[in-house]
Each structure stands twice: as structure tokens, then as C-alpha cells.
Image 1 (cartoon, rainbow, N blue to C red):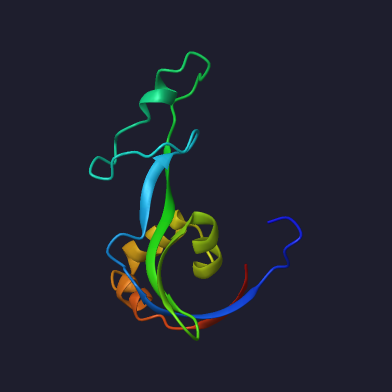
Image 2: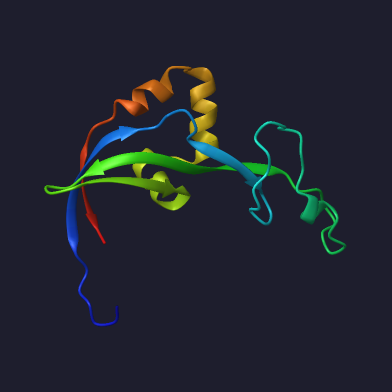
Length: 119
């Protein structure tokens, strides 16, 4: 890897699975929390003797999408850092937006754009 030059790749988003764009994690240690119980707290942070406050939760992106280059189609999972660049906001902000606009997920699945990314 050392000494290799970055490669520029032009790709197009073909499809985004909008059924499960994000997941809940502990706001302190970012361990995964169950999605089916929004009141659940992190078992590690809440029982940690060094943590004097109760931990909350936040959402992180995990977006399954199909992208295409000029020669191949790839199925990829974009996690939080890259998905924030694509969506332009955090997963919590998008979740709050989607609550106010219930069809936002359907619009995301129809998103088709070309982007220039450096790898």
C-alpha cells in the first residue's frame, strides 16, 4: 500500500435499500443497541463504575447500495462516515426528517447520481 498513488473512480448509484438506513448505538462507546426497544440503554456504560452519567443513544448510518463503474456493478455497504458525505447530514438528523416526511426513504431509493470519489 505504501507508495501507491490514489485512484480516481467515477461511479453511479443504481439503487439504495431504504428499508433499514441506520442503526442505534450507545452515544458513549458506540456499541450496537437493539432497534426493537428504543428505551434500552447500553449495558456496558450503565454498569461502568467510572461512568457517572447514564448513556443515551444515537443513530449511525449503514446503507446498502448498488453502485456501478464503467465496467462493473458492486453491492456495497456505506457506513456512517461515507453516508454522511452522501446524505449531507447525520443519521439522527435524517431520521428526524424522515419522521416529518414519511416518503423520504422512497425518494432516497430513487436517487441516482454520479459522483467523483477518490480511493
